[in-house]
Image (cartoon, rainbow, N blue to C red; front, side, top):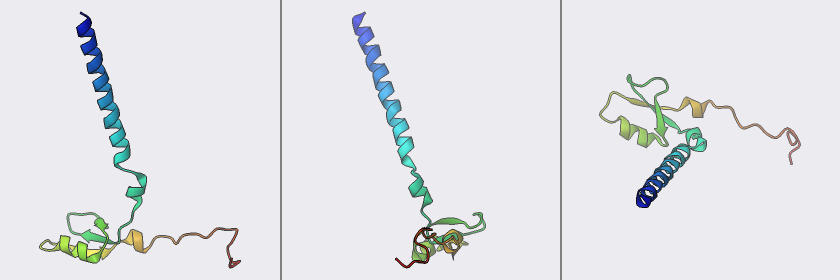
Length: 96
């Protein structure tokens, strides 16, 4: 009887450890910083919405992915037309 209790406790502990590992992996799998990265080029095709698949850092990478498909590459509008970084209001126009 004691061995059954020990076995059940071990299996519960293993299940708890596994669930903690899965939750930790899910939390750290997609970080906001990784999502926030804006790549420079988008693959556009009739199958994609606007602006398309924007996961290419260079034009060459995008053209290689578009090769042999009904697709084209454009500059990522999120990268090209984003607002410039704002200066600190305390030092604006003072030149130091």
